[in-house]
Image (cartoon, rainbow, N blue to C red; front, side, top):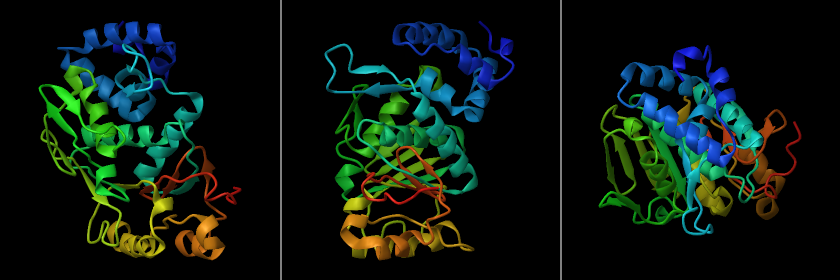
Length: 291
């Protein structure tokens, strides 16, 4: 099997098995071919950037502590709905469009975004990314590499992100430096930082993309302050629209204050993305987006 035998990323993706055992065997053979061949690695990296589904189905693993011993770490295989979300995510990161997606439990929304942030951190030099949640411990809690093992709370965003990186094929893993709420790629100067989503979140900052997790639990005053921070940071010409507030708590007036005119926003599966800003929400919070 040689990469040059595939005329497009789509052709390669069609060849990748989507059943667990066959996918494992395919990955082992595939990355054995890539190891030590920088020319093939470069071609594959270009294919992945064009079609990130290759990255997920050939390079990523997922962790589920509920599984029995020996099955807690398994290859990540995108479901069809998740594949559609990946296309939308990449489009909106690259072009800054507006869109709304609802999040549901066990649909993998947080996992998809953390892995995609790691993807940009790996492949785009000097990429600057920001993650936030209502408490700093939900972003980074005890996440370290100790004796070659990743430790810390997998619930937090940095653990999910670094888990993705440390489970990539060895040839793909960059040199990196990690401190509390900071992850730097030493090979290309890309950075992922973390903050608690308080009234100073992102103030005076410049980022390619921002993740705001659990925004529905952010107190209204702080949510409004974050919204006020974002236009200066992301787009000086046009304020960024950011959905922050549960409708059931603050009503349509606040949803309108935060989102502006939401009629034209695009609805897809399991999360919210407004321009360069990612907001994870619950389906019950924003339920009148019908486009």
